[in-house]
Image (cartoon, rainbow, N blue to C red; front, top):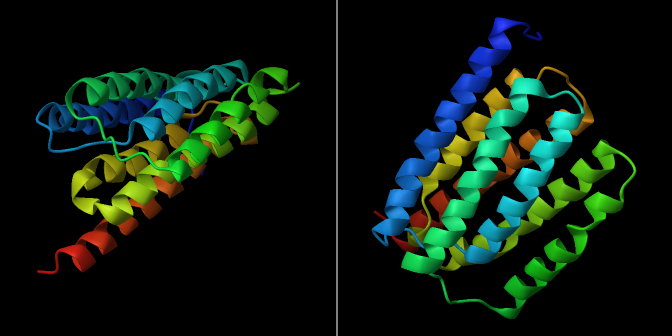
Length: 198
């Protein structure tokens, strides 16, 4: 069932609230050096998320694009804070490969003729951003914040509900990222049980 009118604003507001509910403790955890995010992943996510928000806006996403835009800005905040407080210096060749793939794919959005083509490219770029974090979480699952990604998955559900126009252009990115967040949560949870069995 598709929602209309005021429901869209309610879902957008819930998605925005969840964005801050996820990010504020995550930023605090980085500040306290309890969480050490992989800067490559967050840099890729920040750039791609902001560009997707613009593409969604041009395709009529309306209030549904606002949580994505705010998330992109906060993601840049994670990059800066991680660099200042808790940089993860365990960068390997595979991480550089993911960064290079993402950076070479990122300009393709500008060359595409449609917003959908841009969103497809940027969704792939965003999913590539999980590469360095997956490798790191597999090796050191205790350095990632499982709550952040669980809340982000739920938030993306509200983003989809808030969209004023349902199309591949508006829904692909939040759906793919939400699914990736769920899989990332499961990976962290499983690895923690293996690395530190209770």
